[in-house]
Image (tube, rainbow, N blue to C red; front, side):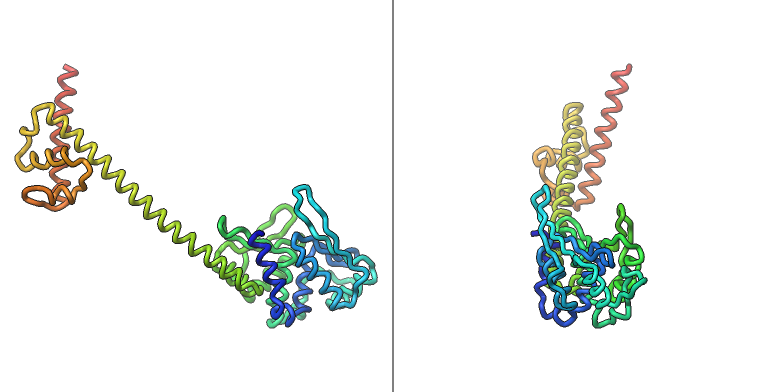
Amino acid sequence: MSFAYRIKSEICNNRPFRQRRRWALAYGLLLFGRAFGPEEISLHTEHKFVARLYADSISDLVGLGGSITLREVKRKDRRSVYLVTVDSLSDRVAVLSRFGCRAGEDPRRVDFAHVPEEEAAAFLSGAFLACGAVSDPEKGYRVEFATQHQPLADDLAALLAEYLAPPKRTVRRNDYLLYYKESENIEDLLTYLGAPKSSLELMEVKIVKELRNRVNRATNCETANISKTVNAALSQIEDIRLIEASGGIGSLDEELRELARLRLQNPDMSLRELGKALTSPISRSGVNHRLRRISEYAAELRRKEHKEEQA
């Protein structure tokens, strides 16, 4: 069961939320369904509860029954799509009239007079049930509303911006999309639409992801530091081996000889540990300075060897 499916199930099962504003929720469902006009009133959805709610809303609020058809269609991937239609013209006209649509007017516009502040959440929840989608929060954060009617998208954007954060907008194929990608905005939207449990689930997923990312960053940083320390130690040992082969460690200044032998014997020691292990302990920066002098001495030996080879 997808995250989007669970959200729509929660809204459908939230009876106290739905029952208080049945008309507004039904208006959102109808207006943002597949078709809403004299020629066709219909909804296509993958959610059986949404299809049932759509049919029941028409039947209960308009008084229709026999001319509403709900059927299930199996797709090639074996997933079901539920189709709900109002079959007769007279019944479609009755539905349009019940929801304030007059003859000759464009029914695919939001009548803001019918969506006062106390009805807005229910109306938007109906719109979401009809045309909303949500991505899996484990993969990313995105919720969107899709409609093929630009004026309707404009009205919905204005309504969302009035009560929530203004949505972003884009066009995909023939659909006008309104969407949110910020997890905080999605959480606020789900709570407002009557799905507070799903909003909390999203918060929990986000917290776990942030903790996981923080641990991964710390681990990667620690791994990088270890790798850097190992590579530096290998380079230091290579320099000391060269000095040993060329004239012996005894050719180094006295304060460098003990450190060179200590590094050869302890390739895994950090600079701080090397400094503490010396007869006269020194700081990490002091160890780094002495190792740099050893490296410079080795570099001078390499230059001499290169000149002799060229000669």
